[in-house]
Length: 276
Ligand SMILES: C[S@@+](CC[C@H](N)C(=O)[O-])C[C@H]1O[C@@H](n2cnc3c(N)ncnc32)[C@H](O)[C@@H]1O
Image (cartoon, rainbow, N blue to C red):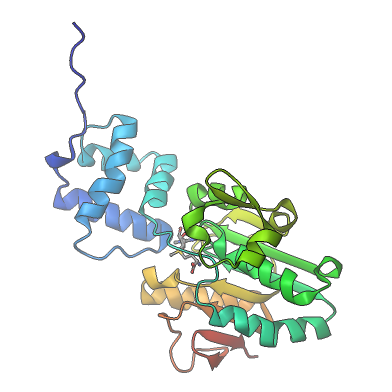
């Protein structure tokens, strides 16, 4: 008779306070993400999956492994990221693009460089792309490029595939669905023409940025909310360096750069323009 299988990693064995603190510190030092206190259940459930995948018996052993396994450290960061997003999230920004961005970029010679920093599964850059294709009329004639980056390879796989289940397509109008998506068994997939307009790449916002810019607009929405203040300040100053003069930085509506952020003018809530 076959021996009953033993779950080597029974999560009820628990997460020691020391292992929890080490995981929080590692996550913060690699990604800037500040995991609040009281997130033990989240760590147990998400990181616990990594323990099971590796056959590691305890969180303490797992933490010891993180000390010499950079690849696994990346995977741990990946599972601890929060990736919530949806099409046309915070629609005021897309209205702003239509009312202010498009006229400015048209005057500048039909050229646009946009960056979705922390793009998650791709709904944000594809929403921007749909707006451009709908409102420009002559999108084909534009030199428009959208760079979309995230630290998590897992979400980038979904973003590149551009296939979404029905339930996530709520914000997409029937006309947009017909024009920009092809139906699949589970939902719909972004058409190749639109996918080709977005370049996805893995990038840690805390690390080296290989791109030179300048960008006309940077979306960094609902990302810095997970960072501490010094990290946010550093990041905003790096965004400024990569923005064209007058270029816009769009952040989440529950985020703020404060009343008078250095080098930026507040245009409206969560919308900032670079000033020199
Ligand atoms: C909540 S989602 C926001 C998605 C989209 N911008 C939106 O507003 O709907 C935050 C994303 O930021 C990414 N992220 C967190 N820390 C990061 C870092 N250090 N570098 C790059 N991306 C990061 C996460 O992986 C996650 O996909």
